[in-house]
Each structure stands twice: as structure tokens, then as C-alpha cells.
Amino acid sequence: MLGQARIGNICYYVANLDRTERFWRDVVGLDVQRVKEGSEAFLIASTAGGVDLIFFVRDARPGDSPIIVFTLDDGGIDDVAAALVEKGATIVTPVSHAPGGWSGDYADPDGHVLSLYQPAEKPRRLG
Image (cartoon, rainbow, N blue to C red; front, side, top):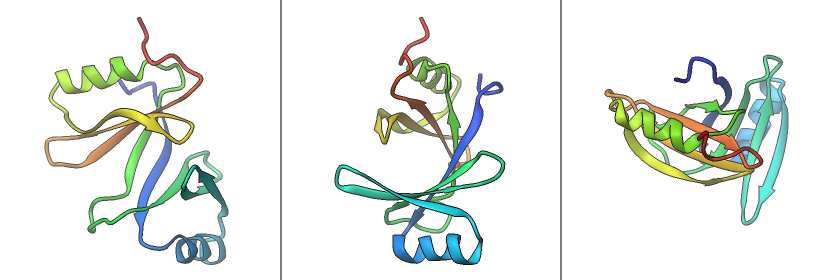
């Protein structure tokens, strides 16, 4: 089902965007961009491999992140989400609006979260 989807992002929940930006830019050496969408700001740090690290300010316990994000370039997020649930994944966050598109979070049997992301310009259903 997700064997053909690419990993587009890895999301981290952090306490402080300024501190996080300095670390990933000045210590790690990544190109870090601050993005503001509505009232929410977040960071995107680009890697040479094309997988972006995204940082959101959220309360989180160790183990809550990072979250691997599968990007659905062909759309159909609702169908993929339904298939995951049908096969035993637990809904953490149903498909809903996300910056620049749609996302949904699902847990495996051990509680590890994987996320689906679909750009807004792609169809939400395959069929």
C-alpha cells in the first residue's frame, strides 16, 4: 500500500522554535526555513536526500516524535487511510487540513505513529 509512496518528511515536536532553528542551522548545518501559516509557525530543514525535517511546537513526551510522513504524490489520502484502518492501524488523527494539504496519523500495534500527507492540489480520493 505505501510501498510506492516516498518518505517526504520527518516531523518533530519541539518546545522552542528559536532554539531548534539555531541547533539545526548552526550546529547541524542544514538550510532551515521558518514558515508561518495562519497563526502557526513551524520550521522546515531541508536535507540533501530530499527528506525534509519539520518542527512543530507541541507538548510532547520522549517517544512522541519523530513521526515518519509518507507523501502521497498521486492523491487518494482517504482511500489509503481507510485501507490502513481496515488492516488494523489505529486512527490517531483522522484525515484533516494540514499546512499545504491534508494529513492523517495512524499507529501500528506498538503505538508507533506514521503519518500520511497529501498536497492540496491532489485529489483526496483515487476512485
